Image (cartoon, rainbow, N blue to C red; front, side, top):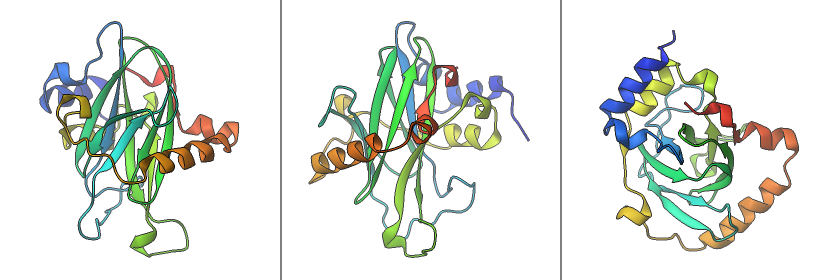
Length: 199
């Protein structure tokens, strides 16, 4: 079952104010969402005890880049950028992932962060963090509307939000950036927000 895009906009407005998730005319807004207890398949996702916040970094200008902020379970963070290409890295305790974005002014984009177990293992200590772009074709899906509605908007590092850097984060950023460079063009395309994915 799908929800109309207008309903998604109304849900956005209800969870933190319409202005909070609407891009300015000369900027794009990238919203990183960390859903509560739900995996990328829509299944129940246990937290296995205390779940630490993940950090989101803008490395468009290189490493170490800029700390956007930290988000925990059932939280989201919005980050304004200039139109064009950008690169972001999400870091967990031991793992991370990369997202690229090609964005247009005046549009809002969404990316979702999941904690998943690799295939062939049920060991929660081996869980990895992955970030995925939300495509334009998915903006009217029920689960996306729920992710937007049921997460709390937190402040970024520059606005008084969580800002303590994790020890070793620069080496983690370097590693994730190198892993990204080693991916195939098709793999990178699948992890890139397209200009048309905004609304």
